[in-house]
Length: 95
Image (tube, rainbow, N blue to C red):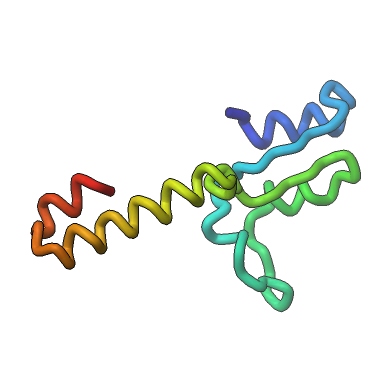
């Protein structure tokens, strides 16, 4: 975890040489949508992305082969339980 404004100050003074983050506290408002014609009101993210030595990406932890396989298997298990008439209670346990 970082304090964004403190990291910005440390980047400006050279105390931090470079920064790469894949989680940002307000990312749900910023990532995975086209904001190319919008004004971004978040000054912290605007400042971070202005540095040439900073890389900011959306959170991708779920986007691995293992995680996607688990999500698919869990979803299919839930559907199978529902189709078998095992009820929502049992299906919810499979998730």
